[in-house]
Each structure stands twice: as structure tokens, then as C-alpha cells.
Length: 445
Image (cartoon, rainbow, N blue to C red; front, side, top):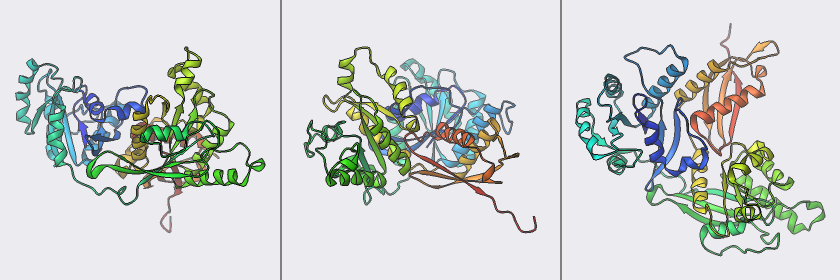
């Protein structure tokens, strides 16, 4: 589903309203929408992928001289071609404009199913302005994304028209490994999460010796996602001086990470990240798994120092674990239940991000814009030339990019490209793997 329209009609406000708390888990700031933003949304248990786009602001085949504006419009047009359903947003307070008519013309040509959202109907007096938009030829719904007026009616009409897909998690539940050093509160977190003391909890480090698997479901109906929660023993400090039981505990934790779709790394907020935490993080990176960082015992950290805030704590945490910068961070308390519900949403969100599939057209448009914005630097006297790219897999998100010679690449530019993918597609908590492939040349050339 794509949200489109001319600039400044409230597309992003509607996007945020539809995805609700999910995006707020991982995005600390909101900004101007330039590239297409993709996110899996969950509306009353029904799941769908939602695209937010920049505004369409030119007539016919005109192209803006501004490179950013032109790229934004191109992204919007690609989103229209990729979507199975369109929400066309207009500004009811501004009335029908020529650009609205131009967007309507483009949408009629696309052949997609379209519902028109007459946005910014912040009060009943504005609703009469919706009649002007009937001439555009789409079903009109009066809404206010800001005040959540009319959005339920729009979604009730929309959801039944979305194409249905099979739910692969019914037969193959997603595996979520809860890991961390001993006594960080892993078992306490799972007990609070499940509201069921099915896992032994103790203040003595090392109580959980084996990996325990617990079925878990998020959502309802056919689109509910099914999970297998895995509680693991804590990673020991030095297995050479420990018993065989501790050695096997570490081994089982390693295997749980390798088999997981998403890893929830539990940290002790009171003591902060330690060397052992960094070793656990290294295992997650090596295994290329989706990841969430949970700072547990936040009640104790706040109690020890009233000046400690999440805003102050987060930069220090990011500095200590820079290689997990892609993972969303949540501050929780298994003891009093603080943010436990949001952690469920975060698990579900990251699981969805690890399985995002990006169409080739959208992917190559983002790469083209990235190259135009910051060309690859010269390496070995040669410059890397990018031809095209495809997505070859999920979990991790695997991009295969065809170039003139992979040896001309630079690690800092590949990191930049990875950040551009995250900016355009989200992918919070999802590992990204980029493979450069030399494009084969026809014989005789």
C-alpha cells in the first residue's frame, strides 16, 4: 500500500497514524520525507507493507531541476507501480488544486485501486469541502491524521480489499533468542513477558543452564505471527576455568544465536555494558542476526542516580557498542513491567524488517541517487562503477550489486551505501549484507 499526493498534504502524518507506535520505537526524530519509506503496519491484527512517499509536484513529464526533488518524485512514481493499493491524500483545507488533478491523472493511468483521503478535516466545519474532490473519480474519505478523525472508516473500507498472502510463521515459527551475560535479567524478562513463571528465576548467576523454548504469538487471526522464544544461559566469563556444564551452556547459547531469526540482547542498565556483553554482541554480528538491545533493570539505574535519563544514557551505550548501531534500544524493567509491551512490538517490528523484500526498480533507484549524491572514491587509481543491483535473500537482507570490479570498492563507501538503504527502507535491527559482483562482459569486448 502506498500513500501518495502532492507536497504538504499530510502524507507522513497519515503514515505515522497507520503504523502507530511501531515506528516510534526505532525512530528518534521525524524529518522531511525525501526517499520512499517502507514499514510493515499492523492494523487491528491485519498486516500490510506501507510506503510513505515524497510529494508529486510537477505536471506531465516535467522534471524538476532540483536533483533532490526529482529523485523524490521518481521514488513516488516507483512506489505507485510497486503497490497493489493506493491512498491518495489531499488537503481539504486548501481545496482542490491543479496538482491534485495531475496526481489523480497519474493514478488513473496506473490502474491501481485508489481511495482518496481528504486530510486535515480537523473539525466538522471543514468536512463540506470534501465534495470538491468527488470529481477526481475516487471514493472519498474525510480524515484528520493529526486528530485521528475518520481513519477507522478509511481502514475498514481498505483492509478487505488487500490481497491475502500465506502466513509462513504458522508452519515455521520465528525463533527469538534472549541472550546476555549471567544475571542480566533474561529469565525475569521472559516471565514478565509471558506473565507465567515457566522459567526458573534466581538472583544467583547461572541458574538457567539449558536453553528453554516457549511458543509465543503476536497478533490475531490468520495474520498473527508465531514465535518460539528461547531463554538461554548467560555467557560465562572464562569457560576454561569453569565446569563442563558452563562450557555446554555457552555452546548452547552460541547455537541459539545461530538458529535465531531475532536476538534480544539483555543488558544490565545498572552496571552498563561490559566486556562479556561486547563478546555476546560480536557473536550476534558474526551470525548476521536481527537484533534488539534491552536495557533491563532501568528502575534500579534510575533509582541509583536521579539525573540518569534515557537521553543521556543512550549516547554512552551507542559509544560502547558501536557495531550494534543498527539495533533499536529499549529501556525496560522486568521487575515493574516498564516498557515490556513495547518490547513485544519491537520484536515483531524487527522480525518484519529482517524479511523485507525490496523490488529491483526501487532498489536501483535508491542506489542511483546514492551514487549521484556521493560517487564512489577512487581506489587503486580506478573508480568503482555500479551497474545494477538485486536483492538475493532475507535475514540477513542480502543485496547483490553488479560493478565493474569489486577490487575498486572502499569500505567507507559501502558503509555509506548501507546507511542509504536504511534511510530509504528502514530495516532497523536487520543486518545488511552487500556482495559486489563483477559484471561479466560479452565475448569479444
